[in-house]
Length: 109
Length: 366
Image 1 (tube, rainbow over the protein chains, first blue to last red):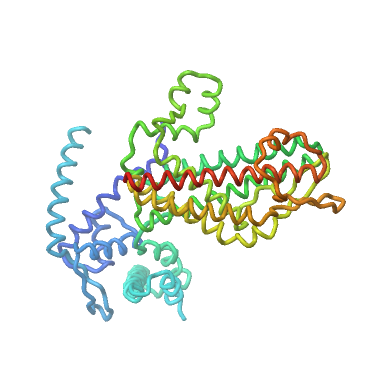
Image 2 (image 1 turned 135 degrees about the vertical axis):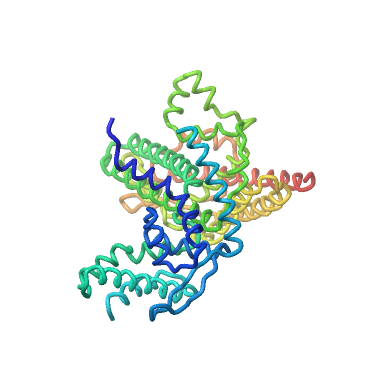
């Protein structure tokens, strides 16, 4: 039976959605601004739309998981994000959870 | 104004004032970074078309701004949607039944203009149906926006679920036809009925009445009656204009009490106090309507008029017994309606007095 491409795309996006927060938190162990963060994620195989990434950064900051600051670089002001202490703890907890899920799925699959 | 400014202005207009400058500055940096990366890749400045293509990739201003919105992304979220769908389905079925009964009465009372009657019934059903869907969506949006989750949404009990079969007409049909399984599953058991059903029903009915009262909902056939094949117009007496606001306020207060009863079903004493006030208000309204003495005027096609009025009618059981024996002309029908109206007001007053005593007793008992 052939794979329904629309259904596959919708399920693939659903599968990825939850993991994106973890990926963003992990990438922001190093300070980055939005554009370079998106490039870093894409380089590791996680393409993310700007219209999703930038609001997500603001949400994570409002939840106390990120710190941000406006700074001038390459003659333009850019907003740099980095994990807050709360973000570091959250990343550690989510990483454990992710590894647990991964190990369970490996057994099932 | 260049293309980036036009794009960012469109985004900014959708954003909250306090975050606007910050978000726009960040988006401007993103767009310029994307432009620079593309120019570096091509080794030349971008054309306007290429710039526009990048802006399209970033997203339509409405979509981009919507992602920054706090609060719910939809008017009816996935958690409330099943309740919304049930309410809409059940409400539409009630409206369909009301219109079908109205149409049936219209068709059997005279063969003329049956096409127009059917068209009016369709018009009435679709108009009131759309109003119902709009009202249900508005209610759900308020629940979503303020994150309201009444107890009856979260702490439901299996024994109270029988009423939910009412939105399935197939179950009605099976039950009426005598299918034992359907009867067992969907038959309403008054002793164990969902306690919120009374308040929900009252809320829906009063909501529909209020919409009709303010002119947002139309029930064709209410202002015209047929007498011996001729059409008569029903004109409300001045008392209804005088009491327009009190009756609307009375209905809205009762709706708010019903809603509060749904949200806080265990606030017995509070509900009793509110219902006591409503019953007293209802008694005053009933008395004011009775005192007016004139309620409707029937006007025939030839201009003849007859009043539906008190005219010294007393609560005479004999008059009630001979109700159907009156003349079938305009005056006869008006007299019959007058007797019906006096009795309806009397029954309303008695039930309201009963409600006063019942709620006094509930208040005392707690």
